[in-house]
Length: 182
Image (cartoon, rainbow, N blue to C red; front, side, top):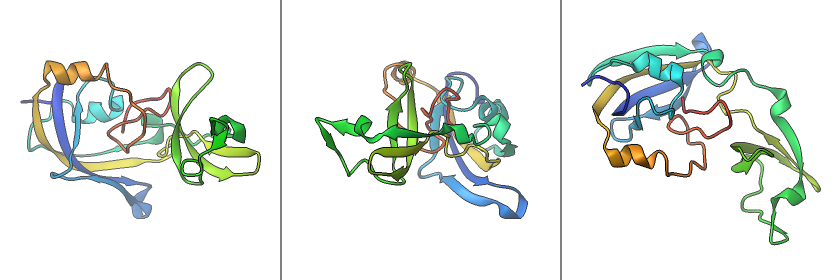
Protein backbone atom coordinates (compact mmCIF):
# COMPACT_ATOMS: atom_id res chain seq x y z
CA UNK A 1 0.00 0.00 0.00
CA UNK A 2 1.33 3.43 -0.97
CA UNK A 3 1.40 6.59 1.12
CA UNK A 4 -1.44 8.79 -0.06
CA UNK A 5 -4.26 10.93 1.35
CA UNK A 6 -6.04 9.48 4.40
CA UNK A 7 -3.55 6.64 4.85
CA UNK A 8 -2.31 5.97 8.38
CA UNK A 9 1.50 6.11 8.20
CA UNK A 10 4.27 4.97 10.55
CA UNK A 11 7.83 6.16 9.93
CA UNK A 12 11.19 5.57 11.61
CA UNK A 13 13.70 8.36 11.02
CA UNK A 14 16.64 10.39 12.26
CA UNK A 15 16.33 14.16 12.02
CA UNK A 16 19.59 16.06 11.86
CA UNK A 17 19.69 19.87 11.80
CA UNK A 18 22.46 22.11 10.55
CA UNK A 19 24.84 22.01 7.65
CA UNK A 20 27.48 19.43 6.64
CA UNK A 21 29.93 18.69 9.49
CA UNK A 22 27.84 20.81 11.86
CA UNK A 23 24.83 18.47 11.66
CA UNK A 24 23.37 17.51 15.02
CA UNK A 25 20.88 14.73 15.79
CA UNK A 26 17.73 16.58 16.88
CA UNK A 27 15.10 13.86 16.97
CA UNK A 28 14.74 10.16 16.39
CA UNK A 29 11.65 8.07 15.74
CA UNK A 30 12.37 4.34 16.03
CA UNK A 31 10.45 1.23 15.00
CA UNK A 32 9.44 0.90 18.66
CA UNK A 33 8.34 4.55 18.92
CA UNK A 34 7.60 5.64 15.33
CA UNK A 35 6.11 8.85 14.01
CA UNK A 36 2.43 8.07 13.34
CA UNK A 37 0.07 10.35 11.41
CA UNK A 38 -2.65 10.40 8.79
CA UNK A 39 -1.22 11.58 5.48
CA UNK A 40 -2.80 14.60 3.81
CA UNK A 41 -4.63 15.97 6.85
CA UNK A 42 -2.45 19.04 7.53
CA UNK A 43 -0.76 17.40 10.50
CA UNK A 44 2.64 17.55 8.80
CA UNK A 45 4.49 20.11 6.71
CA UNK A 46 3.43 19.90 3.08
CA UNK A 47 7.10 19.81 2.04
CA UNK A 48 7.64 16.77 4.31
CA UNK A 49 4.63 14.96 2.86
CA UNK A 50 5.76 15.76 -0.69
CA UNK A 51 8.99 13.84 0.01
CA UNK A 52 7.29 10.64 1.21
CA UNK A 53 4.20 10.64 -1.03
CA UNK A 54 3.85 7.37 -2.96
CA UNK A 55 6.35 5.43 -0.87
CA UNK A 56 5.58 1.84 0.23
CA UNK A 57 6.26 -0.15 3.39
CA UNK A 58 9.99 -0.88 3.51
CA UNK A 59 10.97 2.07 1.31
CA UNK A 60 13.68 4.34 2.65
CA UNK A 61 13.98 8.11 2.35
CA UNK A 62 16.77 10.64 2.60
CA UNK A 63 15.92 14.30 2.03
CA UNK A 64 16.62 17.82 3.25
CA UNK A 65 14.18 20.65 3.95
CA UNK A 66 15.50 24.20 4.04
CA UNK A 67 14.13 26.66 6.57
CA UNK A 68 12.03 28.19 3.75
CA UNK A 69 10.42 24.78 3.15
CA UNK A 70 9.82 24.24 6.86
CA UNK A 71 9.42 26.84 9.64
CA UNK A 72 10.97 29.91 8.03
CA UNK A 73 13.85 32.00 9.23
CA UNK A 74 14.30 32.86 12.89
CA UNK A 75 12.51 36.18 13.51
CA UNK A 76 13.74 38.44 16.34
CA UNK A 77 10.35 40.19 16.26
CA UNK A 78 8.78 37.02 17.67
CA UNK A 79 10.58 37.64 20.96
CA UNK A 80 8.11 39.53 23.11
CA UNK A 81 8.00 40.84 26.66
CA UNK A 82 4.65 40.28 28.33
CA UNK A 83 3.48 41.73 31.65
CA UNK A 84 3.99 39.12 34.34
CA UNK A 85 0.40 39.55 35.56
CA UNK A 86 -0.79 37.93 32.30
CA UNK A 87 0.32 34.64 33.86
CA UNK A 88 -1.70 34.98 37.05
CA UNK A 89 -4.38 32.43 37.83
CA UNK A 90 -6.65 33.38 40.72
CA UNK A 91 -4.25 36.21 41.58
CA UNK A 92 -1.20 33.92 41.86
CA UNK A 93 1.79 33.11 39.63
CA UNK A 94 2.43 29.37 39.30
CA UNK A 95 6.22 28.99 39.56
CA UNK A 96 5.92 25.37 38.40
CA UNK A 97 4.90 26.71 34.98
CA UNK A 98 6.61 30.09 34.79
CA UNK A 99 10.34 29.30 34.55
CA UNK A 100 13.09 29.83 31.98
CA UNK A 101 13.15 27.17 29.27
CA UNK A 102 9.55 26.08 29.70
CA UNK A 103 7.33 26.09 26.62
CA UNK A 104 3.70 26.89 27.32
CA UNK A 105 0.51 27.21 25.29
CA UNK A 106 -0.62 30.78 24.69
CA UNK A 107 -3.31 32.55 22.69
CA UNK A 108 -2.93 35.72 20.63
CA UNK A 109 -5.46 38.58 20.50
CA UNK A 110 -7.22 36.89 17.55
CA UNK A 111 -7.75 33.66 19.53
CA UNK A 112 -5.05 31.69 17.67
CA UNK A 113 -3.23 29.08 19.74
CA UNK A 114 0.56 29.21 19.71
CA UNK A 115 3.42 27.99 21.83
CA UNK A 116 5.90 30.29 23.53
CA UNK A 117 9.22 29.42 25.16
CA UNK A 118 10.10 31.40 28.26
CA UNK A 119 13.48 33.07 27.85
CA UNK A 120 13.58 35.08 31.07
CA UNK A 121 11.33 35.80 34.04
CA UNK A 122 11.87 39.28 35.48
CA UNK A 123 10.16 41.09 38.36
CA UNK A 124 7.35 42.51 36.23
CA UNK A 125 7.75 41.05 32.72
CA UNK A 126 8.33 37.68 31.06
CA UNK A 127 10.40 37.45 27.85
CA UNK A 128 9.03 34.82 25.47
CA UNK A 129 10.13 33.43 22.12
CA UNK A 130 7.29 32.56 19.73
CA UNK A 131 9.53 31.22 16.94
CA UNK A 132 9.11 27.54 16.16
CA UNK A 133 11.98 25.63 17.82
CA UNK A 134 13.25 24.64 14.36
CA UNK A 135 12.94 28.11 12.77
CA UNK A 136 16.02 28.94 10.73
CA UNK A 137 17.18 25.32 10.65
CA UNK A 138 17.97 23.09 7.68
CA UNK A 139 16.45 19.69 8.48
CA UNK A 140 17.83 16.43 7.07
CA UNK A 141 15.65 13.31 7.37
CA UNK A 142 16.83 9.74 6.82
CA UNK A 143 14.55 6.83 7.55
CA UNK A 144 12.09 4.24 6.33
CA UNK A 145 8.39 3.54 6.01
CA UNK A 146 7.31 1.02 8.66
CA UNK A 147 3.59 0.75 7.93
CA UNK A 148 0.89 2.18 5.66
CA UNK A 149 -2.76 1.29 6.05
CA UNK A 150 -6.22 2.76 5.64
CA UNK A 151 -7.07 5.23 8.39
CA UNK A 152 -10.24 4.31 10.22
CA UNK A 153 -13.20 6.69 10.20
CA UNK A 154 -12.69 7.16 13.96
CA UNK A 155 -9.02 8.12 13.45
CA UNK A 156 -9.97 10.66 10.80
CA UNK A 157 -12.84 12.04 12.93
CA UNK A 158 -10.51 12.42 15.93
CA UNK A 159 -8.47 14.95 13.94
CA UNK A 160 -11.40 17.32 14.12
CA UNK A 161 -12.21 16.82 17.80
CA UNK A 162 -8.83 16.84 19.53
CA UNK A 163 -7.40 19.91 21.20
CA UNK A 164 -3.83 20.26 19.98
CA UNK A 165 -2.31 21.99 22.96
CA UNK A 166 1.39 21.55 22.47
CA UNK A 167 4.43 21.06 20.35
CA UNK A 168 5.95 17.66 20.51
CA UNK A 169 8.67 17.58 17.98
CA UNK A 170 7.71 16.60 14.49
CA UNK A 171 4.55 14.71 15.20
CA UNK A 172 2.56 17.76 16.17
CA UNK A 173 2.94 21.46 15.69
CA UNK A 174 0.32 23.82 16.95
CA UNK A 175 2.90 26.57 17.13
CA UNK A 176 1.16 29.30 15.22
CA UNK A 177 -0.03 30.04 11.75
CA UNK A 178 2.77 28.26 9.83
CA UNK A 179 1.33 25.14 11.44
CA UNK A 180 1.91 21.47 10.79
CA UNK A 181 4.61 19.20 12.08
CA UNK A 182 7.96 18.61 10.42
